[in-house]
Length: 447
Image 1 (cartoon, rainbow, N blue to C red):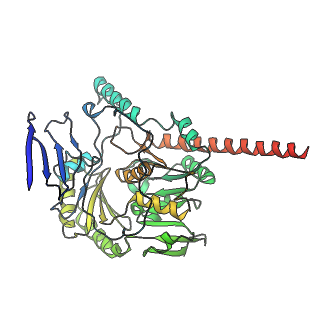
Image 2 (cartoon, helix red, strand yellow):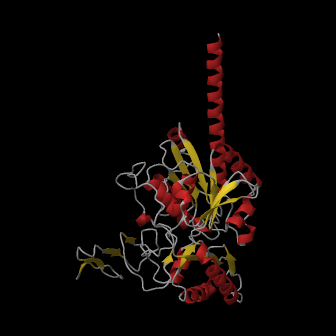
């Protein structure tokens, strides 16, 4: 039986509803909604069956002043989660759960498309009034009290990392390279490549991207790294004898371009023919929309609308969502001005982090500190894994306030570059100091 009570009327909006099934159903829907964009909007918990064949996920929207505020308590880590388990994760269609990171204002996929890509902070005073600029800056400063700059808090990070082994995970687009109009031109700078190469000398480093693994490998061109493409659905990781890795049904042993033996893990391999079919169809049906770019990222198809006139966004969404209705095993998720068609499996960037830690033999050690740097909604799965496991932290790259599971923030790829350089300087100094002490100790023993 369903019991509903309307507790409060909102001006210009709908009722605040607390709808609860009986205890055997164990479902709760709490929603606070209004038609005014300035009012607070929240979705505490939701466990509903969608009647839509293609679940929709959206980037969090920028927070208005009314949504900003410090929590009553902020602990450095949340309680530890259950250890990684690789069983029962593959090719299952989970029931969709909507959380706070979903854009609850989006009553349609068009609203979600518009909300999924909050604009970067702009300093053009011809278009932004001084009051608007001050208000935006104030909101961002308040947000950063919860998510301080990883550069400003670098001494705290290194203090915690002392006597620990850092493992570094990096997104690519918007993190190592700027967001650009043409996804094929998202090149990283030579300075960034040099910094990533240096940091990989000291710490195990992996790139986890929504791009295909081959494509992101071509952009980065560093053999010292581990690569995971298609949001973690295509991983080439280190070879290590591990039952939890070797027993995975979609994990094989192979060799990389350097002839080194590696693990290749592709949990969505059975979807490959379907993804290729979808790519060909979407590419054909959107070719008459000026600016639309359809990208095959092996285990997902990305439909970019960054260069499409906003008046045509509805048409892009109509064609993509209308077509995907015939594929109940696929879902559409939102990135920054991109619709991504992906298999519905219980796998994401967070699971990719766990897999790589297991492959490196670092999964169950207390002296390991994983750090994940990313800018996209899909990176939140990795942020959540590190926060819940009480062993590492995420760094969100953003110039606008967003709801996030990350502990720290960086504004853009230039700050990511400085952070990587700082890690190298800190580690090289620490290693040099350790070597000096060992030499002094050896000399002391000799005499």
